[in-house]
Image 1: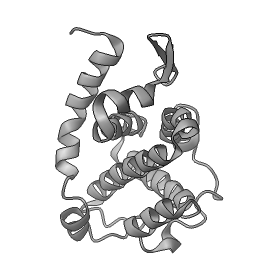
Image 2 (image 1 turned 90 degrees about the vertical axis):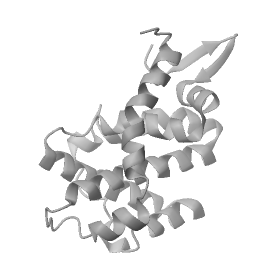
Image 3 (image 1 turned 30 degrees about the vertical axis):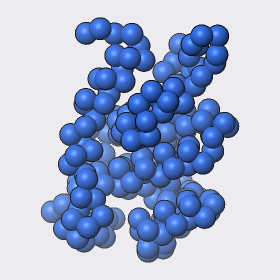
Image 4 (image 1 turned 180 degrees about the horizontal axis):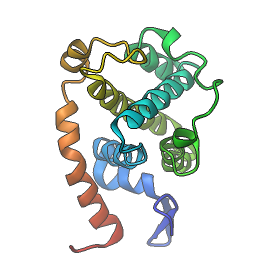
Amino acid sequence: MSRYSRSREAGQEEFFTAKILRLFGFDDAAVYIYALVSSRFSTDSRAGFKERIQFVREELDAASQGDRYARDFAEWLEPNGAWYQGAMRERASYPVDGPGGPQMTLLASLLPLMRTDAETAMKLRCRIVKYVFDDMVALSEGRGDPDCLFDVDFYMQEMAPDYGEVRDRVAGVVLRIGRVMHGSQD
């Protein structure tokens, strides 16, 4: 059974993401799904950086067309809408948008929840995009990359003060959730 499929508990069907939310709470669920998504980016630093840019641009473009919460999120994260507007109409990037890529991993993780609790799914999606954005900004440090025009020092101090804490929590959250969800006693 896929990690994104339904699990059975006491005769009730419950989707994987919903179960993680119930057992571990919003913050740990966001970190866990972020870890899944993040693992789908290239391990090559340059390619992974470019993939994160494409992913974030597409997600912010979609959010800017969503409900008020999503639009506010896109504007808060990157007030320069010109940076991301139209990203979904551009040619798709197979490593980002293809099967097994970060975009499909995010959608597969959240789609069942979207059907039952769209508001929570959207908030999770925004949180995960924020974490990937933080990765992208951190990776841009010292690059002078023309595709990422951010004041890295300001961003990391003012908008991502928890970046290190989130990065430090990933391994522990993934291990703990994996043990509970898959019955491992390692």
